[in-house]
Amino acid sequence: MADAGTRLERRAITKISWRLLPLLGACYLVAIIDRGNVSFASVSMNAELKFSEAVYGLGVACFFISYALFEVPSNLLLNRFGARRWLARIMVTWGIVSMAMVFVRTPWEFYGLRFLLGMAEAGFFPGVTHYVSEWMPAHQRGRAISRFYIASALALVALGASAPPLLGLHGLAGLSGWQWLFIVQGLPAVLLGVALLFALPDRYSEAAWLEPEEKAWLDREMALGTAATGAAPIGIGGALLQPIVLVAGTALALNFAVGSAIGFSLPKLMTDQMHWSIAQAGKMTVVSGVLVGVAMLIAGVVSDRMARPSRLVAILMLVTAAGGMMILFGGTTMIAAAGGVIFTVAGQVAGLVILITLTRFIHPTARAAGIAMSNTLGQIGAAIGPALWGLAASATGSFSLGLLIASVVMAFAALIAWSIELVTARKAPSPVLSSIRPTAHQH
Image (cartoon, rainbow, N blue to C red):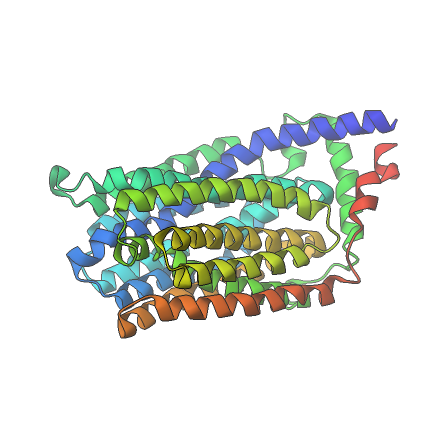
């Protein structure tokens, strides 16, 4: 019976993985490109439009401000309207706003469109995270989310490979290279949004491609996962104020503050401070993306086998801090470049593992609101980081002070991440027991 149960599990998980994760991953890849392509655009856009580092930093922050404001409402609306319609709405609107960046001429237009882009995209990532958690049992969730989240790494590869040629279209049809960047990279979001309407079931009970026995197996596994959270059903208000939500959200805020500050300025930092060409900056972004992808797949498997993945988060945050110090004090271009890669890889994987931890320790009735609240706190950090980074760069004329502060902040974030242990210690499901679950396999 156990062998039959194992085959049933493998068949169901394989179907779900191939039917949902590639499409959702493609959507997330486009989302990361559309929010991050401004980092490459800024190399020529800032000079052409006479934007200072402070103006640019505030514009980057505007995206995260609106994202944070509308994230929880967006996730609640996803529950009301269904994932298929709501995620499609998100993608179509953000694609249109992203392409509208071609019309930016003044700082206030820049601020306004970045704010609208954040509003349009708000709720996409936590919405998909919650959606995937409703399809995958707890012991498969880390691997599933990492396979979707790997799109953020592939986005670095795609952005690093495509941005330099698109910037090279400067003058074509009377448009600047940075304008072509926004046009070409914004259109796929609209097309994928339309595809979601036809390809995405709202829940596994509606999936015609799952057999009745596969749906029954999922019902049993989801019930076991709910019991393993050790929590009782709670309302929206309680979900937003759960200790694990607030502590994990604080760690995520510090991680995003540092990651967005340096990440959105990394191409400019490489071209200005390291004296690299835009093509070299693109190649380094590609290398970082490949390594991030590999690290995410490994982290997904490792976190599924750990009772308390927050320990892995703390280690990754310390490695991120070390990468920032290498950029600052490396002494040579190659050491600084290696520091940039380490910073990017460890920081992104740390954010992934925090979110995996949340899906395992929040009751399903509170998961949508809880994940959205933690990610909202993260986006607040992501808004503050670039704004302060830009002010520091404008005031000092270099990125050195910002790099020093960022490394210290990441070391402090590691302590916060470790403290997640305190609020999960009584709830941690044993990864060994969850992998056996004889009652699930002998039905």
